[in-house]
Image (cartoon, rainbow, N blue to C red; front, side, top):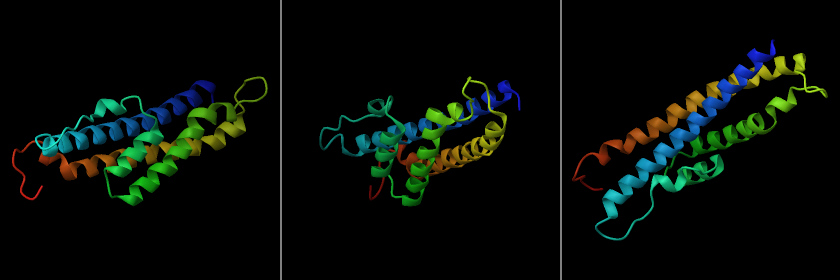
Length: 147
């Protein structure tokens, strides 16, 4: 594997991780908008998605867990977080030798982890989006029975 190809795969995997974070931020923003819509005339509600724009993945998952009942998805997000933390904080150095050159055999082995996290990022992003679809319609209608 050439060095450029390796770094390109790492960048692609990290971009998938960023898309998961972005989807969590969108979910949180829309969930808080719905709460604002439903309670604003009854009590002050000053939370918004902008409160989470610089939040860590761990904080995003924790907030998502408070706004969602899908425990299996939260469990997968926490596992994803551990793998993403390894990738973003140690992944590249894990594949370099003492002179800072790409260690071919380690990089080859690491490729599967990169592919796996990219696939998991795609699945999680879609799952979070589907969870948000369960309430998105309520954002656009004035009166929602039993809401």
